[in-house]
Amino acid sequence: MQWGVTVCSREPEAKGTVVVEFLKNFLKRILGIVFSGMTMAEIFDLLMPTRQSAFVQRRRSLLILSRVRLVAATFAVLTPLWIPVDLYIFEAALGMYLAALRVLASIAFVLLCLSYRGADSVGVARWGLVWLLAIPTVFFLISHPLLAQFAITDPAQQVIAAGYAFLPFVMVAGLSVFPITFFEGVALSTPLLLAYLLTGVLGYQLLPFASHLGAQWLLLLLATVATLSGMSQLHFMSQLVDQSSHDGLTRAYNRRVGEEMVIQQFLAAQRSNAPLSLAFVDLDNFKSINDQYGHEEGDNALRSAAAALRRVLRRGDILIRWGGEEFLALMPNTDAEGAASAVERLREVGLGLRPDGKPLTGSVGIAERGADDCGQWTDLVEKADQRMYMAKQTGKDRVIGIGDKLIAHGEVLLKA
Image 1 (cartoon, one colour):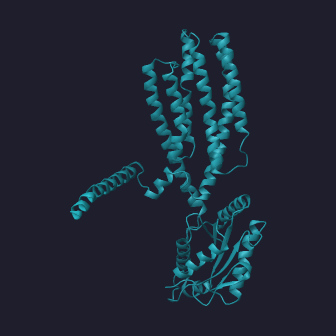
Image 2 (spheres, rainbow, N blue to C red):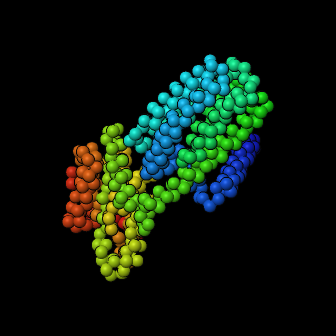
Image 3 (cartoon, rainbow, N blue to C red):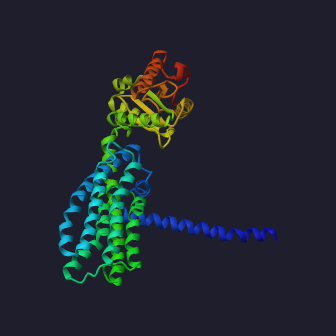
């Protein structure tokens, strides 16, 4: 009896698993059609706000904030220029109310234009977008009830009043100029959609209610297109950043970008008093590979070493090709012990093989911001470099850690 009960209880579970798998595959197929030519990882990078690398996030933030200031400056100039039209078309009282509202909106845009200078975090960029959309949304929610209180019968007045009704359409369409993810687009456009819907529900719409509902549907479609356009911008920007910031041979960050990322992570660690570790890896006897077997074999050795380093690093860690055969592994929120554990995993995985079949080895120096009392990012790199050089001088194929202590030696870093 118990056996029968167990079997029956598992049937719904099995069916549920089949349904979930079917839905997953269906969703992947739809996403593959909509985002043709992109991998699933690239698609999810466009859906989730936190999927991009730190470098892409910073570039995206700078671009968003620059465009927020540009749009705010444009609206700060254009908003008060419409005041004479309102005063001429509408009754004196209504014209004055709208003029005061426009002046306040213009001041808000000026303040936004002057804000966030020097900021480069994605959180600040999102707040800039929020305020950019909040100002016209509040303007819309105040101006609509205000216009509804006055009798607007003249055709010229109706034309001007209808212009106020389409303000949310302008702002939603404006989202298309920002590199945003899907969920950011939904979060930013929803308040405008709700504001437009609210004016119709409360009876403040300037268009007939049937037309208002049709316009609501059009606004939703416009928000969808604008979000897709923003996602397309983000993908294009990510591709450009990826091509310009990575070393073509090893796919690690190049030195120019790597320095910028070390500075950024060092300052962030200083502000939050968080640990930040750095491993300086130099391949042993690399020149002999190029001299004896040619540069192609040397390139293969570099690719192998970079791939091994990526396997032991976490998603948030940063791999930089610092020089010819030198790599930096930057590990945010990682203390000296955690960095030593990462290097130990590297020893277990191995860096690959030399062309003669012998293991490829490397000398490693480890430094940590707090433990080494580094006041500048250059101090962190220099300390790790000194320890790497010490590992070279004392026999190669070894790891020197905090306090210039020998962590590991006598074993090859990478096994076949």
